[in-house]
Image (cartoon, rainbow, N blue to C red; front, side, top):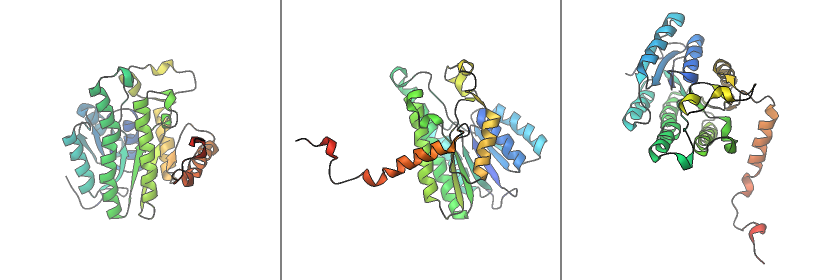
Length: 269
């Protein structure tokens, strides 16, 4: 389906992984803010139930697009929707999964599926949306990463690596979008109460007290960060100065990372 004008003042938000967890919360909060929605996930029944509830509560127009984003054909269909539907003004790249195990005890098919969903899908969708939004002179992209992007030792490396990729992708994208009218944000949740834990064989209730954030709180904070124009939003981080120091240290190395001469510590004699 394609259209030529936004269906609402804010337009339509396309949300992946929208049947449950953070995606469902984003759907509810964006509909309450006045967005129409296109919900994308594998579970059609759950999306239909969510759509019916949100239509009744908010009066917004809500479409569902069942798709397994690890399937290249289904992924291409969603990317085409982003490219062609001028009503879409916001992409929430939320769909993701974790392994039940790690690199050394997971089967290749499971590893490939995580990479397809956590890296390939959000990359291609961000590309399709970004090109379309730049051509229209407005739009927004929200990519869901994780705090383990900066703490890989605390979680299995495939998941944390995929989330580090999303952080890097968004930082680069945001830099390239300056002056286009399009804004990119990356959200780094800490442990959040969603179904991802059960699906990856982990018990979220086993975490120490005070560690796990509620999904509703996480998304409300993330949307506030988006509305403020933040590129990086870390809802659980109290001291913003810690992130600023991290970024300052990282960028300070920039001029010294590529040189003709080998660093002195690696020279022999």
